[in-house]
Length: 87
Image 1 (cartoon, rainbow, N blue to C red):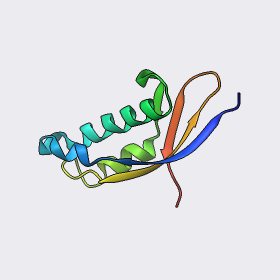
Image 2 (image 1 turned 45 degrees about the vertical axis):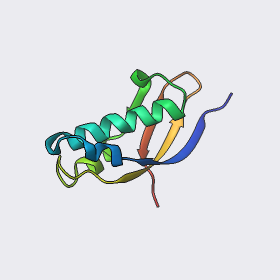
Image 3 (image 1 turned 180 degrees about the horizontal axis):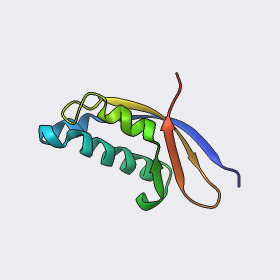
Image 4 (image 1 turned 90 degrees about the vertical axis):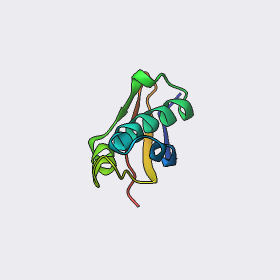
């Protein structure tokens, strides 16, 4: 089995239901949960790149983006890595 590579658009509208000061934290958590579910991997094995984290925190903790486009690679040995997709 080879490495699996996919591009996902992750909806982060649920993060806007959190208190204002926790929204970026919640968005990061929702991103990891989404990737764990769709790549069928444990959440502990999901790693997000610094570029995703910067994008989530770009406008501060109160205003994360509504959606995020990421490129995800699932490795044969186990583990998932995600980075911001280049449009």
